[in-house]
Amino acid sequence: MQFGGQTPLNLALELKRNGVPILGTAPESIDLAEDRRRFGRLLDELKIPQPRNGTALIPEEAARVAGEIGLPVLVRPSYVLGGRAMVIAYDVNTVQEYVAQAALMGPAKPVLIDQFLEEATEVDVDALADGTDVVIGGIMEHIEEAGVHSGDSSCVLPPVSLSPQILATIREYTKRLAIALKVVGLMNVQYAIQRDTVYVLEVNPRASRTIPYVSKATGVPLAKVAARLMAGKKLANMKLPLVRHNGVAEIAVHDFYAVKSPVFPFNKFRGVDTILGPEMRSTGEVMGTSTSYGLAFAKAQLAAGQKLPRGGTIFLSVNDRDKKHVGPLGKELAALGFKLLATRGTAAALEASGVPSEEVYKVNEGRPNIVDLVKTAKIDLVINTPLGRESFYDEKSIRRAAIRYNIPCITTLAAGNAAARGIRALLEQGIEVAALQDLHQGRLAATSGPKSGD
Image 1 (cartoon, helix red, strand yellow):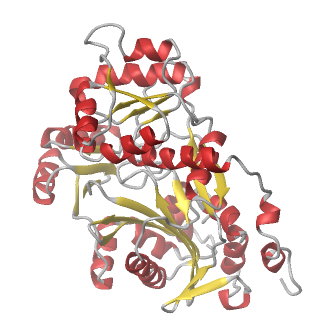
Image 2 (spheres, rainbow, N blue to C red; image 1 turned 180 degrees about the horizontal axis):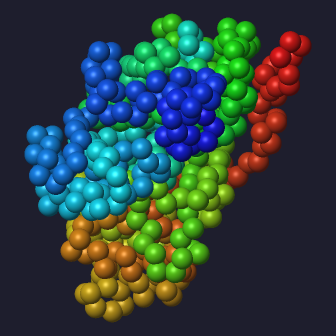
Image 3 (cartoon, rainbow, N blue to C red; image 1 turned 45 degrees about the vertical axis):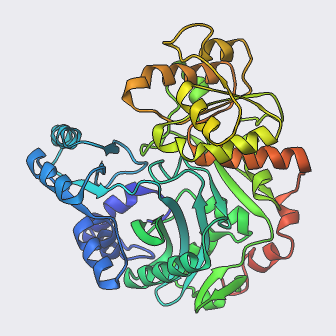
């Protein structure tokens, strides 16, 4: 059941009722993790925080739930994969329209309504369990903040900015959840950290899309280990390279950073907007490794088809929320020798931070505007975070032009900061190449190949 994504989880209980033996985690535990109300009660019992949430079947009920939770809210159907049909609603009308549409789409399943944690850091954790013991496979820090689907966010292993206290909390919560859900095999947990509080967003008692990435980053074949656990083996007999943190076992990470970046099909679909949100849009993933986080990010971007420039001109246009944070990014890019162009509001924010930039027209303000500059190859990198509905057309045309003319385009400030670190690393270190086998020498021998009695 654990290696087929969301569909087998949806079938688990029905298969068991029809007499099909299920290996690993019991269907009852899978259903507990998938049922929002029962899972919420479990989190309360375990004293693990979760975003305020509720469910609704009709628009009026949805409006009441959203009012109790407080806007903005994340609205999504239950039992789906990939953030499909998920939206962030900033007003009650959007919530009501969404639930009304969902009711027309098929049999009545509750719509999930969650408090949306703004300016939060998301973290993915993959763990192994055998019903008694728990081993954390990897703790991945998302580079994009909460609100971008986990499959579309770049992430880094080991984490780069989480405090020891936050990491200790994440490990403890993961262990509690795996034991409470009686997980046998793999489990994925998604957390959001906002102002030093760790919230559980969701738990999937199955292999997630991050398993191949964590396996390559750590040198431990997690799917193989999980399959053996599901067949009755115990973690204690696995000879995994472990470290212990306050009694929680974790696979030891190497002395390098591994950055996973998504690959998007935007260049195949002329006219599509590149903005990222809660609905998954990527079609693949790549990994970059290096002893420095910046270079690992730059290598991952290169593999994903985004070649970060080492010099030239960078265009910045950020939303009002990001304007108060854009100064340090501007300073870093200017220090790296880039010429900065910006729209009026962003230029003013940079100026206030003491960063010189040249003002450029938006599409609807005159010529030559930013799209003209993109088309004539005067721009080497676009950093454009969404500005809201009123400038939707303007932004969309910038991002479309960047895709069409093969100019790297970054749509979150967090990824912009990571790109700045990547460019600095490219300039100072250059690119180095290593084979995975060389990175994991010795470790692979300990965990690969069937042993006598397997």
